[in-house]
Image 1 (spheres, rainbow, N blue to C red):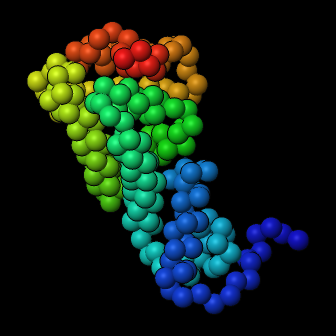
Image 2 (image 1 turned 60 degrees about the vertical axis):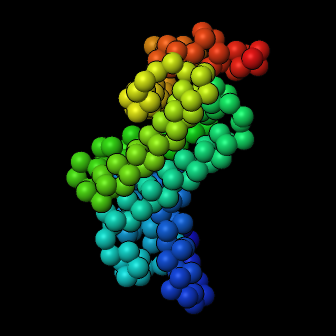
Image 3 (image 1 turned 30 degrees about the vertical axis):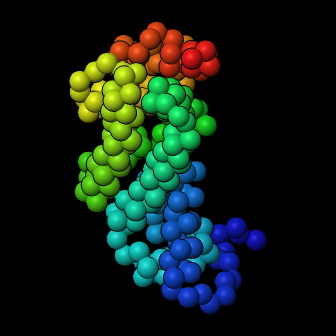
Amino acid sequence: MSSTIQKRTGRKTPAERAAEIAEAAKEIALEQGLSAITLRNVAARVGVASGLVAHYQPNVDALVAGIFATIVAAETDEVSGLLDRLPTPLERLGMLLETLMDNSRIDVTAIWVEAWTLGRRNEALAACVREQMDAWQEVVQGVVEAGIVAGEFETFDASSVAWQILGMVDGLNAQALVRWDGVSDRGTHLARAVEGMVGAARGSLGSSGRAQT
């Protein structure tokens, strides 16, 4: 029997159906990429006709943008929560670098990279990308500014430093998508570069360095 035969589903409320469609689109994005979010693919995942998905999500570009924002905002909130548990800006910055270079987040990295490309032709997605980049900028800049106030960092342009940190993280993680080994220890090299940018002691942003502080 063909696996594409639609599943019989009970009658659901509009809110339940809309949530089911959004969850299916999210699963597809994480498994196959944003470009795989189509009416047909979402309908097959839910087990309904494409027309029903179109009824709830008539604009696929908007659906893709919304799913991107959902996935990325969840990661930003998660990382911000982890940072809030640490007592000092130095510890928070070190943890931030380690967390963002964690290969367990490679699925979200792939979402980011694809969104930058698709956003060239999907303005709704481009707007969401800019909004989420601003959210990350705010997180990183807040850590750097707190370090300046605490006397742990020596820099006078927290905004520029945050922008540069995010640029390096994005670039290194994008390289990791194709398993490039041009830089063998990306996390350590990133930490050393950021230490110089914020004026922190050498080795203080690595896990071993923070353990000694």
